[in-house]
Image (tube, rainbow over the protein chains, first blue to last red):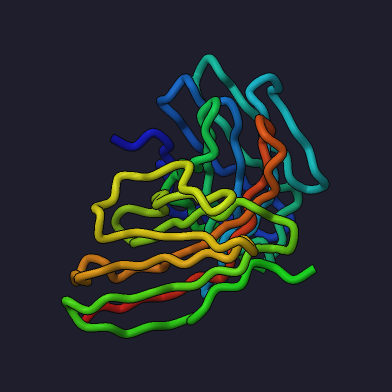
Length: 112
Length: 115
């Protein structure tokens, strides 16, 4: 049973526009959420995180929103750049655990 | 600071063989976790080591094992390889102040192909 779901396998946006990547989770014990970016032939790179006590965290062009009642989070990238093209993974940590639970990823393509 | 280093980058083995993968964490990081990435299952947690002890374990058979050395370097072993073990194996390290959420930093992975 998948506890972290990224229902869109792919997303394509124009350079300069907003990219919105979505993630849903089922486990109410998750209390920390992370986004990782992965390029081919490289390991995942940490992007941004959010604690369950917050509903928004911003870092430059990247903003993560958390809606706990809906068990939903989203990553906004504004403005999108061609270098943002990669696979984005949503991950979650359960309270008291350091075992990352990943979604299956969304492949973002930013077209020039 | 050097990142997480995994060796080798690529491996080809045949069914029934065993394999050992190596991971050197970021200097100062004492926790090492291993993950398996496959197209069908995505990224799945294998196990975590801290202070040479396994602290967490995922839902993998006993053929998958690991260990950690006193310098925090870790190895992962898979015995009696099966075709389904073909995957990208990722190692991640983090610092460990107890009770704190720390970011896990990943290596580039070892691509294992079982023929």
